[in-house]
Image (cartoon, rainbow, N blue to C red; front, side, top):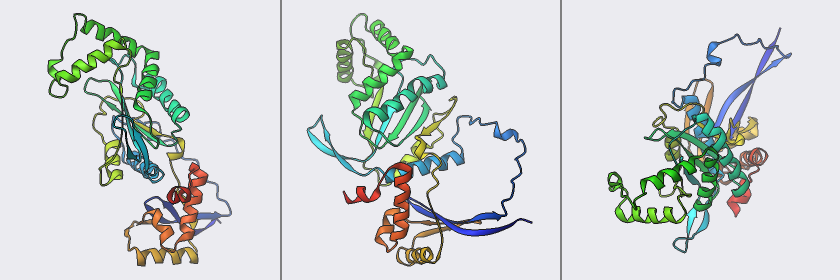
Length: 328
């Protein structure tokens, strides 16, 4: 007859500690094979981010933000430095979409992600697919490195033109401006005469080979960056009609287990210390309890063991050392 024992465990994440019981069976019990369930093969999302996917996106964002420390970068336009933490990239197709969503992701987005890692050493990223009003698919990418906008535009346009999107853009622009500059009256509210003339001059100078298909900016002046980014990347707007995956991230940010630890007397003392000194919010579920505490506070609250265990997990899983980042 098989028996089991419940082992008290915890998992540490950037903004919380989850406490739960792990069940250990002895002798080893053979688990029955799951019966066929049609739901396991029906992964149609109908253009909606599920609750489970929302939780995964939120956790990935938590870790990306935690490991993205503030840094100062030069601003080539104004000659002054500015603070930078994470980059928010937008990628659009230079001309009308001619291929399936999955083909665009496979041929273009995937190649761009590879080059982000190779050229700009982007370690952690999250991408999100949406539909524009014109029906084209476009992408948002949140990443932990600065990417020069002009280099990114050249890179993305080169990749898109494997499928002919820049060539078609150039043909359209030459036909549209065949008799000289032609002002778009319907866009004047957002794109005035001076800007349209400047864009026309720039486009003509490079023979319409550099469409404005990318945007890069840092997220700043937002009081709660995590809440803002989670809401933006996990929203269910502008997704109707999308096929294939709606979002993705690097392997390390997918299904993060956190730093797991058996709760012994020493760990219990540190948890009690957190409760009495920080008085964090608690959520008590049927099978787990969550203590909402920022991991950086662990090293400042006589909970060095918990912090060191979490730091070791970050090093082994991400190759990231919080001690070096926070002391730098």
